[in-house]
Image (cartoon, rainbow, N blue to C red; front, top):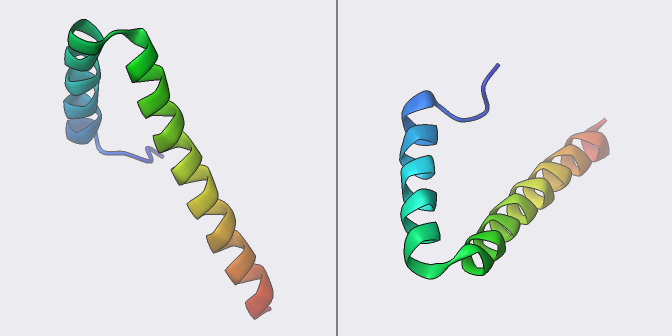
Length: 54
């Protein structure tokens, strides 16, 4: 099961490629790190809330 729709993945891939060419790899790595960190934190918070309900 995909976490992100194919259309969304394509748009993100296109934007990351454009940023990579324009800004460089350091900026892209920082951006991706921030996004992944946010997703993991959100996932952990949801899981903790579900666990507390039981």
